[in-house]
Image (tube, rainbow, N blue to C red; front, side, top):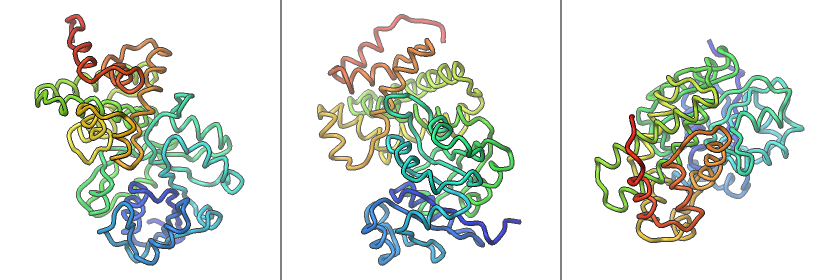
Length: 334
């Protein structure tokens, strides 16, 4: 049985952090608090008992507390970070004096660190070397559907089997299922690279290439994730599961995916700046594409779809040119 004293702080009040906070607060015997960097927004959420900025129609459970003070939030036993990958290191640095070795550090951040190409567990290990109780939550999840309590499943990968079970336990209730794993690299890599491939899927659909193209792109995209995963020590079964194939299918096929929507807008001839402005939220795949290409070179692994997305995003290549470059590749054994 879980102790009634267990306290969990969700750090990050965007759509994903809010959805996770709502899901955890649905459980009994948990002290759940959510902190966000914008104090005025946190106060407004407390007054309205919802997140009017990202999930306006979904009321907060009575047990969810809004915490404007970071120090008080960091007093929780478990810290669940729902912060974009580009801001994770700077946030930890700003808070590290209050983070103790006994804290459980969990993150639901997907991406690769800008410039270093590091996975999030590497960033956390560098900044919090004395914290050894760490876990990642990832899988095919749209924030709105989690907040609406629609059936959802994720993977929790942790530094120990016990921690994976504990994190899964406070997530796994109602219509939400949490499976456990010890493959942090595989879970993180699947969650990062799928965003780049969703941009590719959006481009293909935006150009009107049809369902055959989408299916081929998802399948060959998975092959790219698995090649790089193999080189980096990930378990292939992880990448065939929720955090790999599951998340890839989700983001490539539904317009709730910001990365997919960005690809569609690029196919319509809009600039990256226009597309991002219209979407209005972070599109992780843009920065991840650059870092994935670096990993491709570092590990000597071919990632042709990801490389073409990079060319569109950073080298002025048109969407049609990128597709033709892929189609012109030599035939080979699958």
